[in-house]
Image (cartoon, rainbow, N blue to C red):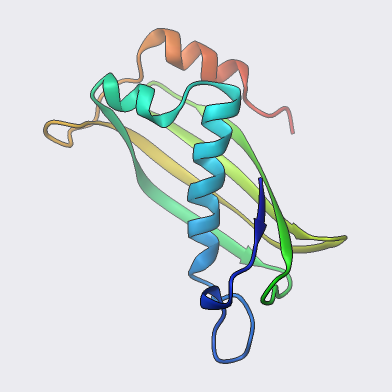
Length: 131
């Protein structure tokens, strides 16, 4: 996914504020699901959400206003009721950040953990990155 940095995403030092990387990850995950599996709304129609249970961001460089970022996303693993997504943020040839998020499938009605339906789990497992 490409993202052009907006002025509002920068801090007093003129660089992208660290909190925005999790926003970039969130958008990239939704795009990845839409392009490689099903739109997130498909899971909502099944009564599921993917709640974040862990997030990691490692910062390797700085991005600034109007930089064009490329966020690469992939599934690292899929289990019965959870999954882990990995991300890399590049600006040209420079690595800006990398990270991961882990998610639990939860019921839209009560927030309790639910297994990912078998067919969806199989589709997602087939998309797991091989390294």
